[in-house]
Amino acid sequence: MEKAFIVIALCFNIYKIFFDTKKFFDFIPFFSLLALKVYNSYRYGHFPVTGLFETLSFLAFSIMLINFFFKETNKKYFFLSNILITIILSFCLMAPTNKSPFTPDALNTFLFPLHVAFSFLSYAFFSLAFIGVLSRCNEDKIFNLNYLGFLTFTIGLWTGGIWAFKAWGAYFLYSIKEIFSFTLWVYYAAIIHLKFIKEREKLLKITTIIGFILVVFTYIGIGIFMKNTHSL
Amino acid sequence: MINMLKKIFLNTKAAIYVLILICLFCIIGAFIVYLNPEGYEKIYLKPLILWLLENKRFDTFWIYISVILFLFVAISTFFCFLNDLKRRRIIIAIMHVSVLFVLLAHLISSLKSFKSTDHLLIQDEINNIFLPNNNIPIKISLKQLNFDSAFKGIPVNIIGRIHIFEGNEIKDVQLKINHPLKIRDYHILLKDITGFIKHININLSSSRGNEIVTLSEKNVYKNKNFSMMFVAANDNFSMVKVEILDNKKNTFQTILKTNSTFSINNENYTVVSISPMIVPAIIVDVIYDPSIYMIFIASSAFTVAIIVQALKRFVFTRKSLSSPSEKDYNS
Image (cartoon, rainbow over all chains, first blue to last red; front, side):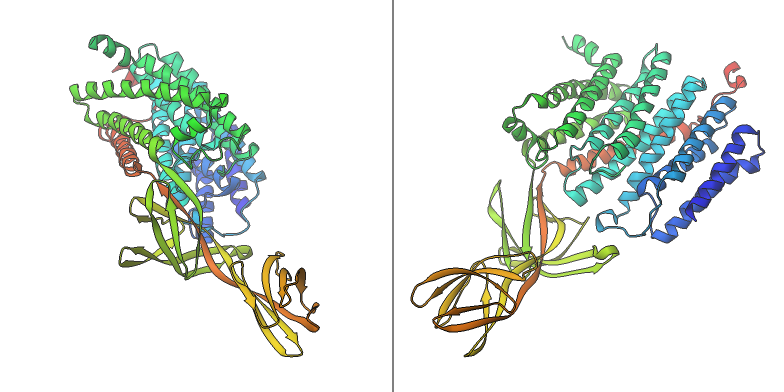
């Protein structure tokens, strides 16, 4: 059932890549993923953000959501962001869905969905900043996307830190995932400060590309391929 | 001199390079931690400085370098804060001063905080938790434990009703996962639930009739004919190893299981049943972090300030996120 929503979103997204669709078709993938989130929220009794399937679908949803707020005229930007959404949704289709709506006590807090949702929203901003570099968007836009990514990532780390202290008694447990997340925060703090130097354009582009590689490694590399206590 | 310091520490380029260097050493550190998990297993259980003194290894170099680089960041942030105040950039000043307080709080935490783990609280027993920085133990007792069984029997909605003894006063409070309790300067966290075997009842049958032998690690069972002591038991308590001393002071060890027999002074005994008496217990951790509220307030101030700054930038000044059109460029 859940994969049907992904199939609909994926099909219309692929259609959008090859054909210049009308506004009505633009909304179908977005509303399909929104319906999936509402349906799973109802099933689980909380906002669904556990596991690879839920996080990937939320990441694709976040990218679509951010794109709605842009008056972007750059066609290459939309083309590349649709390619990215298609890749994410394809992986999502292969990922196993959660079989049980069971939530252990440690995850049963409003801080948990807030932590995950804001972290993935920030990943979406950082990914779009990377696409902004590839599609040669102007510097202001790349900077703003990085800034909003940094803002949402800060909220994600803040809620995660409070939750970790309440559940495990430490806001920082020195696991590879946590050290990488902290590194990501420091890295994007450095990118934010690029605004104050003169010869920033080239540096902003290079650092945004490296930042995206760091984001992918923090999410996919550590979350899936490396053994650690922090889920995804 | 001050001007020279200002020149060094107000240099944004230098600050950016230092931040990127911190990232580099943190990435190296993350892989070191990943490849040597045993070496870093107890890093957050004691103050970081103490841990570093106890673990003088080469693979901790990234922590020392990061601390030095953070010192540079702290001084740089302080100068930026002064500069922000001078230029009346209040929100940015709040962001910078919050970072300073987070670093300061983390330094205090590195010097003093610790985590004392895996304290077993057995129901209806008064447990004394001794802590390294205090001679007076925390006196605590589990009165009741409630939970529901969920998916595959995993316990959920765990609530422990506990009594805390503070002088002559007894506080009746609830302890839940994700809801730590604050006692004096400590936070008590519910980690897990378990069962504690208080004693084992062995029903023995002989020509004199049936008798219940109650064994525990502390108690020795005695009757006219023999005394029995607990030695060990298997996981499901189907077999119990005991030491028996008869009234002629002969000692021997035997394994008791249901329907097994043994004889003492020509009296034959048969084991009718073995039943363990299990009482509920919880496992708690005690955390001491004198700077936790400082970290919370400073990080909250930073988060609020960055949200306000974003609202100011994108909403109130109506600066759109989208690329400027050609018209915008011309204007």
